[in-house]
Image (cartoon, rainbow, N blue to C red):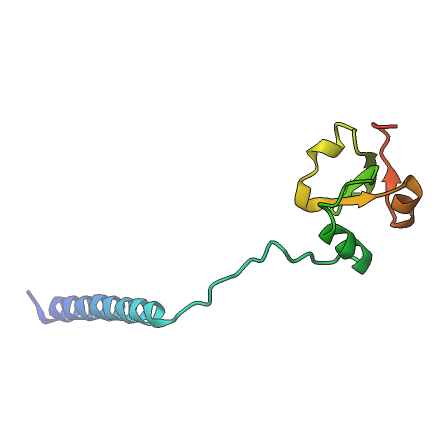
Length: 113
């Protein structure tokens, strides 16, 4: 082996060792950093007007209410409509009259008249 090939081999070994230890150091550094856990609260309703929040809190009180809507939707339904039964209970808003639902910005569903 001549001197030129010895230097090339030495540079290659040095480069590989440098890459190895750099990767090892970065791996150890990343392992030491602690990430903050993400907490998801399903009870928080974002972007709802105060009246909708108030009505959704009273969603279990359907006695005497004849119409229902979803806090995520735009339509209201009679309580015996099949589409109304597909709304999740935690998303239900109950109304005593069609006028009350319309005053809150909901429109009558076309599939349950």
